[in-house]
Image (cartoon, rainbow, N blue to C red; front, side, top):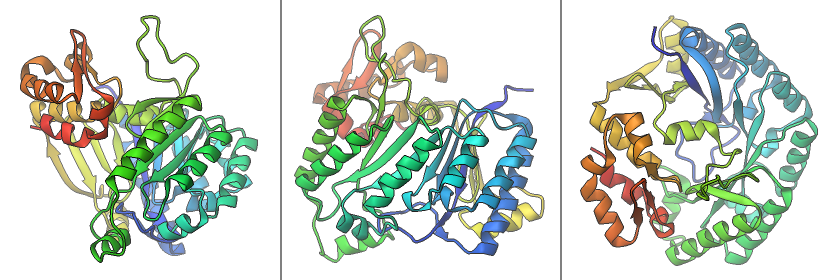
Length: 388
């Protein structure tokens, strides 16, 4: 049998209410549907367990912490029975309004060792603007609860370029976030996705996008995070690590970087379970139905709830891997890329690398290719050049 898959993503589609910027598949929680989902997720875990030996698990959403203690215990006991616990890194996304001491203890008891907390802002009017259900006070309270429960790896998720957010507000948020001394920081610029309230407000002319201010906020993020002891390893991700410089003097990936996400950016396989989840196993990409009722119906009939699957050609997959990997500060060492994909970046993508280098958006040497500081700001455009 081929090597078992070592990375697992679980999607919890429920939220207390939809945030104004969110385009991920999620819906309001109702008790009976959440119970059906919990049972269906256990069935899906049973179907793939024989092919899984997780080193990383990431539970995202939605709001995974919205599930109650009994629902969480049902999932975790099933994972224990199926021998799916014991991952080196087991992350769960939490909303500050849904963290409790009992839940934190349950998580720790079953080996969950990393929490990603969706803070987004520490400014009350901006939290209201985004449609968040938590207050700034809840952020600090929940962080303390997690620390007391023994969590030593916590990520804070922030957003910038929020409508009406000023540089002074962003400064204050960054200062408070640094003072919390988390191990990881993720920070994303607001993206205006179709079918979201923020997009509709933008289209209606209720506010305009200030690209210059967004760039200044991104620069301030990097500066403040760096002086605060974090090391940037991907466009929007920063982690602590006192040993982040390797003997050759080249920046290494910090030890507290999110290992699950590193697997994505380096083209690894993973199972994706739950409504709307995507997976990539042995050259085949799958996507589950983005409909919780239909997801439950399928699994109750004993079938995986897969809406679509496609087998990617080796070259197309290599192009995707190149694109994802360029999001990281380290870029792609040529030897690593060839080992992962069997393609030589210097042959298949020579023209694209030259184009980015001439623009000043990338640097190429004998060992690797990586985006510059300016190039990382436009990484999506750079990545598109590598897709086949």
